[in-house]
Amino acid sequence: MAQDRTPSTWIWPAAAVAICALLTAVMRVSFDSFAVFLLPLADDFGWDRAETAGIYGCMMLFFGIGCPIAGRMMDRFGPRWTYVIGAMIIAAAFQWTATADALWQFYLSVGVAVGLGGALIGVVSHATLLARWFRANLTIAIATAAAASGVGMLVFAPLLQLLIQGEGWRAAYAALSLTSAILAAVLLVLPWRRLSGPVAPLEVKSASRVVPRPSADTAISPYRHIGFWALFGIQFLTAFGMFALNPQIVAFLIEQGFKPLAAAGAFGATGLAGTIGLIVFAWLADRRGRGLAMTISYSMTMIGFSLLLAIMALPVWWLVGMFVVIYGPTFGSRGPIVNALVPRLFGRGPGLGLIMGSVHLGMGAGAALGATLGGYLHDVSVYETVIVVAIAANAAALALYWSVGAIRRA
Image (cartoon, rainbow, N blue to C red):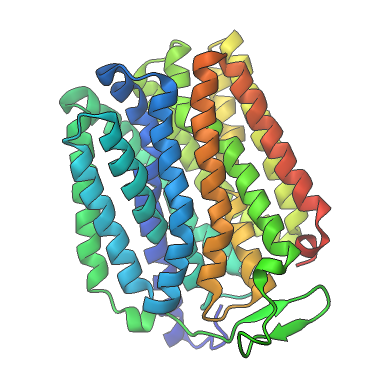
C-alpha cells in the first residue's frame, strides 16, 4: 500500500481499486462478448469464420496500438480524461454497430473504435494508476481490479445471449452502448485529484543497480533493456495462444451440439473462474514466487485446451465442466504478474504509463494475429489445428519467462 497507512488514507487507494474493477468489467464485456455475437453475425450476413473472427482480431490489434496512447494520456492528462474519453468512444462505437450492415463498418466500429476505447479504460491505465498507490502488494491490487472482469462476463454473457435471441443482436449492441455512456457520465464527476495518487521519479533498473532518471540525456532507455522485450514477447505469445481460441469458444460448443444459451453460460462461467484465478495466482506470485505461479497457470491453460480435443470426441457436460474449472482460472492470470513486473524493472515515475502501454502493444498484436489466424485455420482446416497452435504458443511464452534472468529475478 502507499507508505502512509493512517486510516484516512486507505479510502482513496481502495476507491481506486474499485473504480479500476468497474472499468475492467466494462472493458472485458465490451471485448469478450464478441464470442456471443460471432455466430449470429456470421449467420445473418453469411460471413465465413475468418472474416468474422477478423473483427475481433482487428479490435485486439487496435487495443494494442491504443495501449501506448493510453499510457501517454495517463502520464500527461491523468485518469479522468483518459477514462472518460475511452468510455465515450466505446459508447459511440457500439451505437454505430447497432445500425451497421456491412463488414467494413464492423471492422471500423468494433475493430478500431472499441479496440482504442478499451485500451483507454483498460489494464495499462489501471496498472499505471495503481502503481502510484501500491508497492509490495501491487500484483494483488491489479489482480483484484481485474477479477471484476469475470463477474461481468458471468452476468452479461447469458443476458446478451437472451437479448440476442429475443430482440436481436442490434438491440444487444445498443444496450452495451447505453451502459458505456452512463459510465462516461459517472467517471466525469469523480474526485480524481484525490484518486490519482502520488507520483514518484522514474528509474530504470539494471541487473545490479537502480539508475535514477534525471534527464533524457543520462537515462537508460527502457527499450534497450532485455526485460522490456522479454515482457513484450511473453505478452505476444500468451495473447496469440489464448485468443486463437477464446473468441470461438461459444461457437465451438454450439458446433459440438450444445444449446446456444448453455454455451454462453459456460463461457460466462469461465469468466467467474477467472475471477478466482486472478486472485489466487496473484497471491501465489507475491507469496510463493512468480515462477511457480506462471508455471502452474500456463500448465493449466494447456491442459484446458487439451480438454477441448476430448470434447470433440465426447461432447458431454462433465468435460465442459472440467474445461471451465481448469482453463477458466488461467484466463488473464498472467496479466497482473507481468504488469507488476514493469514498475519493478522501470520504477513508478511519470513515464511509467508509456512503458506499460508499450509492453501491452505485444499483447494486442499477439491477440490480433491469434484471433485472425484462429478463424482462418477453422475455415481451411479443423479445430484440432487451432488447439495445437494455441498450446504451442503458451508453452513458448512459459519457456521465454524462464529463459530471461532479468525478469526471473525482478
